[in-house]
Image (cartoon, rainbow, N blue to C red; front, side):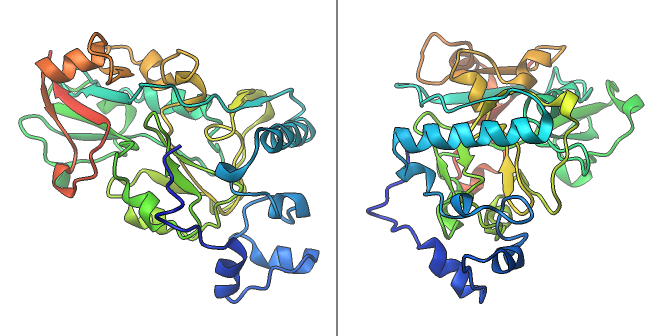
Length: 309
């Protein structure tokens, strides 16, 4: 994984919380006082508070954590979930291309993402914003994302979905004081929800408005929970933590497409391995007109926009 702890020493979690003038003693009263900065249920249990940073866990540690999470999900939702963590794929750099010329703004990608990734329905959280703007130029100053459904598919408009760009030099990662977020070896930027302290520095640093903060306890109806879960992707989140798109990490490392790619009715979304010269996405980037959102910031996204019919 991509964190270099020798170059960037990991700030002690307890010292950081102490710096916020909050004493994290072992009592229920002091733990409750940390909410929403501490991430778990209203009063987290001691094991969750003392859980190690994910990158420092042994495989045995991780299996124990997965089992505990599955038991919690069973207790709360009454379903048998499978929490896994497929490893990064060697010689792989996942990338995404979105054809603005084909996108019709139907927002099926938005709702497929919500369903796949167990996003909160109340309050509603969405990873994808679809920007509608007048055709003729890409003018983000004139874009709107709250247009009515009947405005989808207009011939006089461009539609530009924006989500996490999975940057190679992610500013969100640099500012995290406890290293709760990092870039995986095959590209996606992830968050350890059990290590995040909810300071929201990453949200302020992201130039794409791609991170979401859980101001209240996320709610997903039990009959809509997706039981196929990844520890670093779509498992249930907590109040007081950040979350974001991971390219559906739990799917792509099993050879599947992200949910938004599968559901797109016009084929505007393409996904694959940028390191594979024979992959569809590599050929698109080599042959089509491609641009990068906010290229001047040098974040080096792995999300590319294309103009093609």
